[in-house]
Image 1 (cartoon, rainbow, N blue to C red):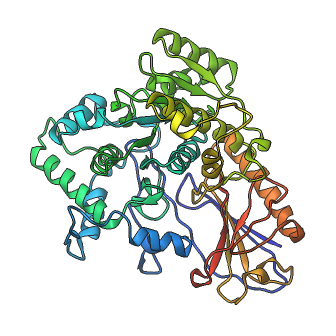
Image 2: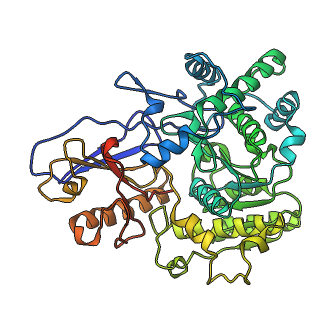
Image 3: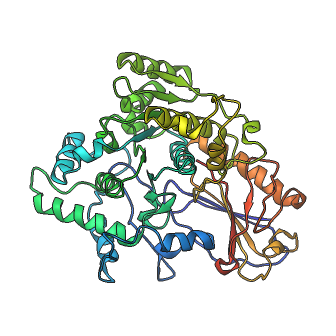
Length: 474
């Protein structure tokens, strides 16, 4: 077995490749990802072997067909954008990069004040207030929690929009409508509408927004334009001063597990970090969190009391509640994220008057609605504890599992804090044990068999030349 650890130029990305091989075979494969802080980002898309990277996405055939047919019609007609329009949009986005170094204070003061002005220029203030938003902050797992929420509410029959960061290949990954990346045409329609209006009104006192700020604005534009029922918004960095905190009236707020990260900006104690995260709380708006270290929990509770916020601490999901299915994202820590997502989704349904429609029987924590279980088990999030096998030389993917196979198996994750790296290591250890004992695995187009850890393998289309684990980490 060969293990390749690649700590590349992208600081928050770890790529570990493992080859179960008796032959000398190594195929150069690169999976770049981008580090995003509130004002920092590398290019909005990348080229792989001189091919525009936005087409390099691991998806099943059904997902590809669904994406091609989704959200491409505007007012009954297909938008007519020039072929270079997407590349031009990417160049415009790249012009917003501030080149701010990690730990430096944001170059623009009064960020939220500026956000309000940008939203007013675009006429989004009132429309945004009508969005029924789940707002999620945290150090670890906030992206996974958002994706769990989206999948649950979509399975309940609602039109969903979710904004997460960073993206791996294509900036459109940050904006999902009904579980699918926003279509290129719809992205361009909303992008140029925002860009042209903001550029026209730009002054020395109100310049064009930095990149993450612009993408946050764009998410509000997309979700209002698409008239989503539920908008799930992931905080970029911190909470109090984050661009997403322009949200004034969320339906419910959540805080995932907290740890030491971005200490140059958020503070070097858990209490200081928790204060920033709890900054998304709004007066009397319900909030949920997971068990936290005492220092962090004390701050969260105190903030909730100040704003008269009903606060509830969720315990990890019991795997028995899944009725034999597994979570779509792997790792034991995902049971905390899943439980938080269940509480947030339940509260959203209750506060929007939809709970009785979804759950006709009395709800009990030990008996999840079937829609919730389907959502939790079908969640996808690329680059989180993702397993990708290079099967391009094989006609049958099952040959990958053979110990005599010479192909590479990549174990991909972006863990970048001590706690996340520990969780990643545990997942990696369990995943390798699974490969060493293939009797625990079933690779099938129709069915998946539960492995020893929380996760399962998904057999993708042979046309894609690969398959990947449908379970991911944070």
